[in-house]
Length: 121
Image 1 (cartoon, rainbow, N blue to C red):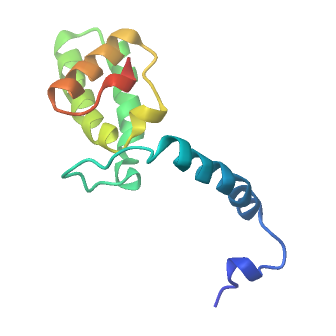
Image 2: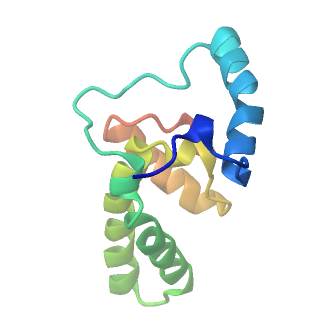
Image 3: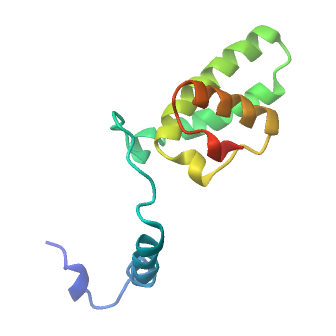
C-alpha cells in the first residue's frame, strides 16, 4: 500500500511543483475560463495520440527532403492524415510547425476537415 500524498514524509519534486502550480492554475481558470472547449465526438486523449507525434515529425522531415513527386504526394497524405488526431488532442495549441508552407498546408487541411486550424499560422 502506498503512502497518501498528504502524509508523505518529504515532498517530492513533483509534489512541490504541483503546490507551486496550483494557485496559478486556479487564477488562470478565474481569468480565462476553461482552457479549451471539448470537441464533440472526440474521445481520443493526448496519451492516445502521442504515438502519432514521432511519426508525424518523421513524415514532415521526410517530406522536406523528398525529391520524387510520387513520394512527396504519399508523404503529404500521411502528414495530413496524422495531423487531424493531433489537432484534436490540442497539439497545435502548444506547438507550431516552423516551416511556413507545411504549416499552411496542414492548416488548410484542418480547416477543410472541420478542425480548428487558426493556431497553426
